[in-house]
Length: 454
Image 1: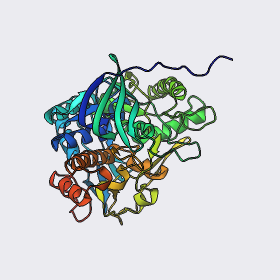
Image 2: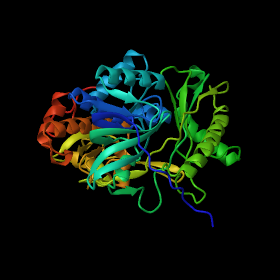
Image 3: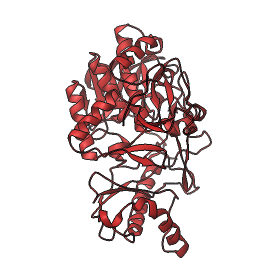
Image 4: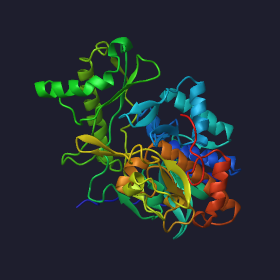
């Protein structure tokens, strides 16, 4: 029988550079981590597989910040501040930021223009002198010993290259770096199911006066179309909302499943291939239905994003795993480094199920413990973003961009503190980290007053 493997000859890998902090992944967590580390005076490299930043927010066309706000005793407040505020201000100066809009009558989200996000993120990193390496896909690591990463391997158009760093921060979304380093992780609900991915799309050519608040009427039109047998939809809950210009709307009717009905896996290349193709097919079907909605008759697809929108893959096990109970109970933690105001958002088969803390009785946000950023068994590694230490239920809430900004800023600053104290991230003085975060404008909960305004 033919061999099932190929032996690659040993080779010397060119060293791209040596840094104090290397961040893998340029989504909200990676942007904030790199800026925080560089602002603290550490030579920092941000590595991104695409030619732009923003993560799922740009590469998957999400076009919507979730989790920046919380419903605090019935009043909306923006609870994610710090570096996120610097980025939003830059997007706003480019006229690319919408006013926050209400979701389900209970929580705010904030739409943005993806081009403005990309440009603003470039500007933010340049202002803080972060080195950036685009078009570089993480491909593996070399360990110094059982507990310490020596170098990260990346594949580029120049071939395979190596990056050395004192501390690495995994903001890959999929926990790639942590998994390669041998850190323990979980996948989905540990029973073969993950939050379902989606394919976003954007439409142009809408008549805003005629469309009105179409997002209120579309669910009934969907039910009518299914009853008539003219259209079928992969999930009940649809997103159809205007962008900054009323002639452009973002759309998500899609849900990507395997043949057995479980979610497409974002860490299986064969499944991802199937998901991309099926996602575009579903997007076209959604578009064909929307052309029957008043105001959308002359609309056209202006953008299908570079990739499928992935919500959950690996979740790295750290010193604490944020749970669904923590989210619904608005949990407090002595080692809080930020907050999450987004509810549980469970993308289950055929639907999206939201679970909120009690409103208006509760303060509407949970704190995020530093321990969820520190993996077990690897000493010079932190993680931030949707691959941080959370249960399947907890991750359904704190995976969104607001919490990712908060986690990333804390991870970058923690890396700088560890380097300055000649220690490992697990052993830094968390009180010092909290003090510095607050001094730099972050809201971490604890004894701070809740920020005013939106």
